[in-house]
Length: 112
Image (cartoon, rainbow, N blue to C red; front, side):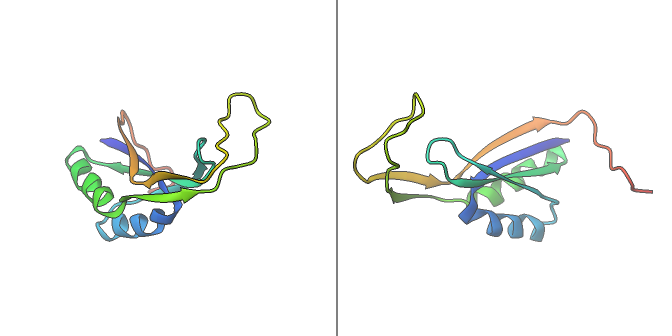
């Protein structure tokens, strides 16, 4: 068994959850945020049998595409180590960061 953790843009999350559920996968959605652009994103947890990992990755690939967006910079940061850009700049957003972890044990509490 594997735990697939997919970190995706909020804009892609609803569609991805819907696609995964349509494929028969259970999904847990956790709100999170990225550090660099300070944007909302979503971490999705999907527990699957080893044989289903490639199907989950396929759904993620076809649902979460990278795209370019112009970002308006923040005011000069007061926190040490933060980069400040004085002009708008273009960044690539979207896609997904995916971790596939082995699961030693799965236990569903409350199932009789």
